[in-house]
Image 1 (cartoon, rainbow, N blue to C red):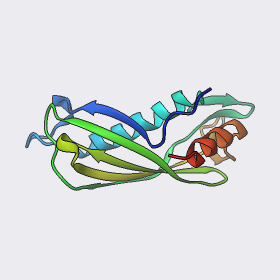
Image 2 (image 1 turned 45 degrees about the vertical axis):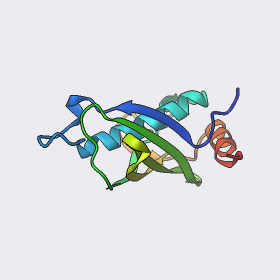
Image 3 (image 1 turned 90 degrees about the horizontal axis):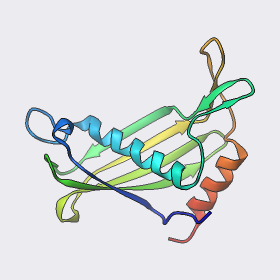
Image 4 (image 1 turned 90 degrees about the vertical axis):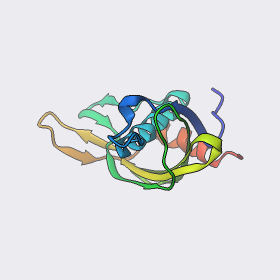
Length: 146
C-alpha cells in the first residue's frame, strides 16, 4: 500500500443545502467536511473507522471539535480541505484542518480530537488503546516527509 500524500487534501463544492438563510456556508458544513477528510484518510490507509471487537463495537467518536471562521464562502464555491495529524497518543487522534475557498483564500481552520472506544452490549462506552494496525499506519503517514 502506498501512503497518500501529506497533508491529505480533498475538494468539495458548497451545495445549496450547505448554506444558511444569508446564503453563506452553514457552520455545520465545516464539521461534515472535516469528517469527510478523516474518512478519506482512513479509506486511503485501508483502515476501518468502525469494527466489531471481542467485547463489542469499536470506533472513533469525536471528543473535541472546533472551527474558526475567517472568510465567507457561498453557494457553489469550491472548498479545499487539508487534513494533518497533529498528535497521536495511546487512544486519541488529534487532527488539524485548513479550509481554502475561491482564489485559494483561507476561509476557516479547525481541529478535531477522536478517541478510540468500545461500546458493549449495554451501550456503555469505554476507552481502548488504538489498535496496533491503526497506530502503525497513522504514525507512518504522520511522520512521512511532506
